[in-house]
Length: 167
Image 1 (spheres, helix red, strand yellow):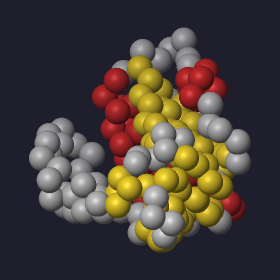
Image 2 (cartoon, rainbow, N blue to C red):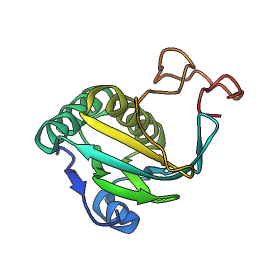
Image 3 (spheres, one colour):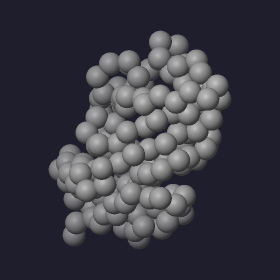
């Protein structure tokens, strides 16, 4: 049996419990969540909030493609939930939620990581930051700052983020 999908573009607050409930499965022993939130500082500038614009149809197609690719790599039984916010969010607002469940933890961890990193590269989603000084700027999305190529294997994640541009 193949897993199930939920893909959405939200204009109301994203509900974490809805994602947890959706991926729940009696045959799965693991669920992994990625919750992206708006932080209060980027590129050394205090942030007041963020606006997201999304090309809905193409973004949903990308979410579906990524779910298919994740299942090809980590198993057909994955349950996958992906929602991205469209509109204005304040600090700590949830901008994206990804939940993946699987029979074992390794598959859900890897698939969840794969999905968020690939969304950053492939989905037509634009982010405009609003700063405390009144300025606003459209910000380019990127995966892992400048940490180099993304790996979905057992390589340890870099622990020193001092070279990231957003710190």
